[in-house]
Image 1 (cartoon, chains in turn blue, purple):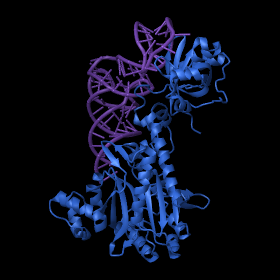
Image 2 (cartoon, chains in turn orange, red):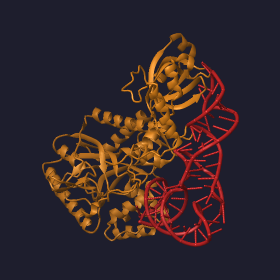
Image 3 (tube, chains in turn orange, red):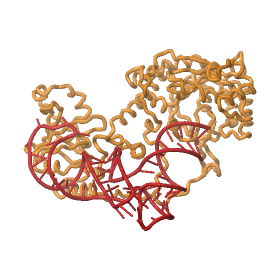
Image 4 (cartoon, helix red, strand yellow):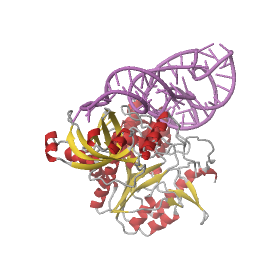
Length: 517
RNA sequence: GGGCCGCUAGCUCAGUGGUAGAGCACCUGACUUUUAAUCAGAUGGUCGCUGGUUCGAUCCCAGCGCGGCCCA
């Protein structure tokens, strides 16, 4: 049990307590059980946002509605309250001669942030504002702490992330981001379900953290006395399901990666992964174009999305370029001498090229890994419009299937938009012998100090030995997709409660170092 | 992990080596169709924390905390 943080005693807190005490003294319940509404604010605005004052007067629409007070404009014997249901706002007109003495006494003791319920008729004021002419009023809950300012709202990003409820109360744009996010998830589900995909949930706690190249969070199961890892990807479980005959399968859920925090990385993030049997990666490029166009259209209203100063078009088809092609072109331009794709397959040549552009390739890095690092340094940032970068080096893709004509290259693509990796997909490696070889190569990397190298997963190899059909699979970063669709500069803007370091408030438990367990 | 920047009233922000200011909010008064309501007046501060320099530090210096941006 931790003590609740004591709000600082400021004049506004004192005043708000006094206002509630005055109501209680008059017999008003400070925390009533419920309030029966006939309408929400949003429903009223949707139904009558365009109804004229004359029509409202003729219709005599009565309503009972509740919300949080955001603005009070007081005129002595009358006052205007603006209430919100979290989405829309509606003005309430309160005048002394229209209310009981009790209800008007409540009205003059209200503070910004309080919850109220109102019964009255809809009308338009002289300035044509849709309003409720209050006939009665109920106090529903007290707001003891003052809300951020009405004009500038809440701009301090730290407070917006730590106290998201304040952000949602005063910044309508914050609410919109999470509504778009909800639609994105809904559109994706419908898209996949319509195509015969089964949605599943696979374990979040893994004995072997596999399916991606990343460092995991570590935990411990007491009863079984065994270490467990928060999953870094659901990939290997989803492919076990394809072995089990679930030929089209997807999961939308959280992954956890014990890495840095940035505008593009949160330690827990939401990923869509889907697998389609009897398909290859080229099929998924086409499907991804269709899916993202539908997502943009249905979640934002348009396939064209404004992101910063750019307009991003999700209309199919997307640009496609081989990874080595992108890197060789970038190097040719940067260095002023021709660099061929074949140059990128010779370790010594590509290492020298990397050095020329300011990178420091490690001795343990092969040609493939160095090529990818050059790509990240020179190419990624410039990929504004949706672009598939395909055919990756085998070295960096331990779970992908090689090309028939080129064992150094796997059938894999990543999708980039506004310089961010949004998706990663490949034809799945389904040869258990080759898979074992790849894991063993990763283990050698791990022994050389690569903490992100993939671990051996014997159980997964056994599943492959039962026969995984030719399958293509893809992961899509939902948070980053929502960032693009909502023009949000930070991943924290699209995650309701992003990870924050706790504010020091005196004594606290010593954090456990997962690397020393 | 490194570099740079920020932290001042509830919120948004100014400002200064001599103990601090505005707007909004809050309080008092006026006001029964306003909408950033208006008008008049009055409150409100551990200037992130800890040290140092100084007669004196919110300001200069150092360390720490939290956050932001960039880099790895």
